[in-house]
Image (cartoon, rainbow, N blue to C red; front, side, top):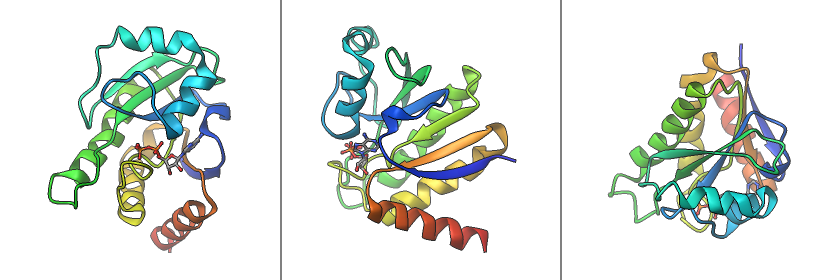
Length: 168
Ligand code: ADP
């Protein structure tokens, strides 16, 4: 059975088949985890992503990992939080689902996700963790390892608590 693991740290260092990027619609880099991934993967990533022509919110696109330990990067575009009445929850769930679907098409068996939309896009962290973990459970049986990569101690505590609740 798959383990959903919580790992705190920099997602760019993880030795998995694919890491997921919380990108923006242009796919040409930005702040937060997106910036860290572009820096670590190298300039070839930007050149490659120019050929992708952007990505709508809720969808996902694949690139090689270039200089990363990960073979692939799955770029998905999370919703900006506008108060919750603009389909944000469904769009965030679509990010996770479409990332998993793309991963399955490329024989990925280990995958790591950041907390999509919970940085500058402002999605409430608790609701975002519920959505992330629910979709991870949907796909759990089809992967060897699914990592929820958290960056802050606060996010780590939140995910640990959610995992504990759902395992009890
Ligand atoms: P978004 O624009 O989707 O909100 P951000 O990059 O601003 O994306 O934030 C998403 C999450 O990624 C936040 O929880 C942030 O703390 C986290 N994060 C930032 N840098 C990294 C990194 N190098 N590895 C993993 N997570 C990161």
